[in-house]
Amino acid sequence: MQKDAYTLILEAIEAGLYKPGDRLVESELAERLGVSRTPVREALQRLETQAMLTRDGRSLIVASLDHNQLAELYAVRSELEGLAARLAARHATDEEIRVLRGMVEDDSRLLSGDPRVLSRANKRFHRQIHLASHNRFLVQQLDLVHRSMALMANSSLAAEGRSEVALAEHDRIVAAIEARDGNAAYEALRVHISRAFETRLRVDAGELRLRE
Image (cartoon, rainbow, N blue to C red; front, side, top):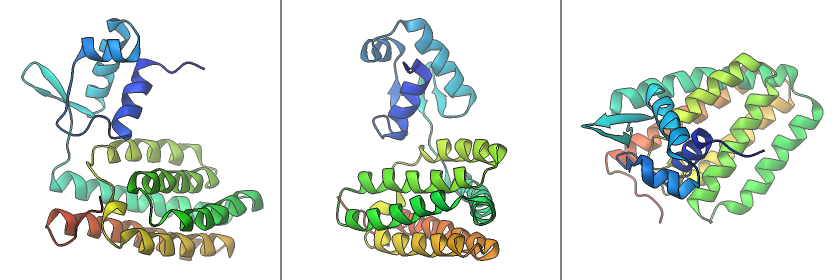
């Protein structure tokens, strides 16, 4: 199925092709995407309504998150992700749990690689937990949260030493889900998100360096 202009632009932001502060020009996007300007204009209006884009004079630029917005986003993400893990421990099929375990094992081979590859693997892992919750309304809300995460210039996994710790946290999350322990899964996921937020704050404060 052919993707529409909205999806293509959103995916470009999520992939880091357009970063916070970058200006999006309707005519340039239409040429790049190979579509007419009308669907591009409609897509930009939709992204502005969703706060993914913001106005800078007459131009539209990719939005950025200030410190308070970042804290608010992580607070919501922590609760919703924790709930997804709790529900996954109750409702995930044996097959879904095996897929999660396989992801942890596969991702262990990516630790020394490109942070962008790690970030994509991380998104797949979290998305699998969302789906394993078997709650469509929760999945919808988490989709919105993760869309806003694209407004961060870098993944916390790019911080030195974070990827190894994050993988160990993923292992504990899956172990709790495997044990069908909803409370332990909830706590393990919340701790994981809390440490990711702390890592991001330390990077912003200059205490941690980002890997190239």
